[in-house]
Image (cartoon, rainbow, N blue to C red; front, top):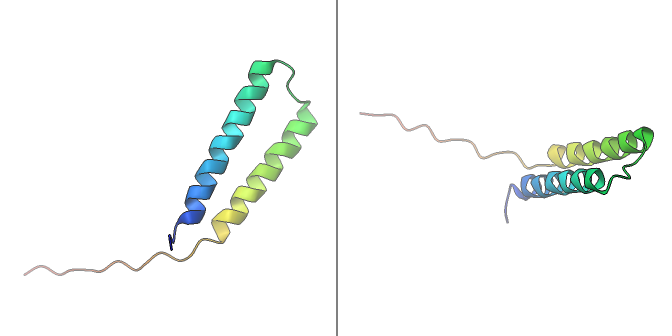
Length: 66
C-alpha cells in the first residue's frame, strides 16, 4: 500500500483545478466572481481534507559514524 497515495491524489486534483481555470479563461465566458469564489473554496476544502487524512511518516533512522 502506498502510504503517500493521498499526496498523489492531491497533486492530481490541483492539476485538474488548474486545467479547469485555464479552460474557463480561454473560453472567454468565465464564471461570475461569486461562483468562482465558491468553486475555489470547495476545491481548497477538498484538498485540505485530503491533507489531514495522510498517514504518519515513517521515523528516520539515525546512523552514527565511527
